[in-house]
Length: 313
Ligand code: CUA
Image (cartoon, rainbow, N blue to C red; front, side):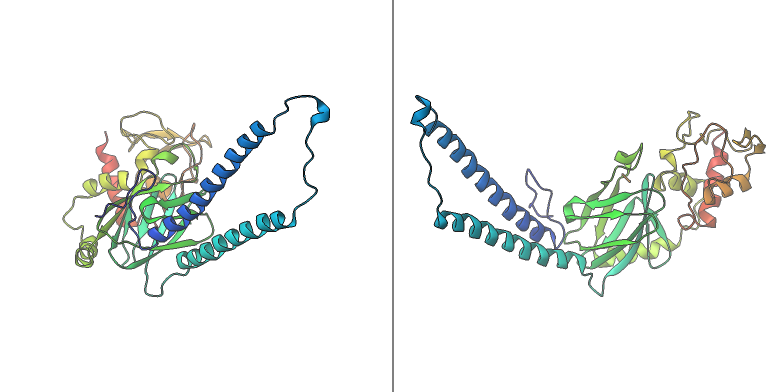
């Protein structure tokens, strides 16, 4: 851990962070300087040349001053050129992704983040990465616009449906760093959070190895974990209260009336269909707003969720 955090800015935890801050402070202090000069000048002249007597005592200003005009044209132009050149250089660094970057797929949906690793497993809400290694995030959304933001890394990118966007970073310190969604995306936008967990390369390798084997874990225990890590809980309650979607309490095995008027018994097939093609059969009184979990939950995950649902009597 270092202590680069200030009252204005979080810790600089990625390789690009100090450059982003340097550019920001350059623009910031130039703006403060001119704000001060212009404000003080305005007040000074307003007082010094205020009208004291009759109208015919108005002062006459100069007709023009080429030196002055050149100065106030050339100096700001130079400052703006420096801002552009510097900004463009940093922009390129942030957008040209190193070839050896580790690629992780990010899926945003209402209201959670899922991270798909090249080894074939995924995690919900927690992005685990190795330290000192460029990480490329290839991102897309299942539903509406989201935005992926890690303040400590100074990286932010919109996450769109039907289109990939990407960003990259290299974490400098081990630890946990907050992820925010910074595009208003509905009721639980403010709860669309996550954590980047930075590990040493050895710990990361060990972690990857552990991901493959969740054997020995009872399905309903795994299902309970998935229920929160994949954010089912943002729309489905387990205490019987009505939320965005139907509650899971006492739902399995019950008979429900669909929006179409037909009556259906909530069994394994209905739950599976509702996870993969949520809008096929909507329970009466609810809106068709659930995103598909195709590609986020595999067969084993769905079985685990069903097993958990069965325990909610
Ligand atoms: Cu997703 Cu706001």
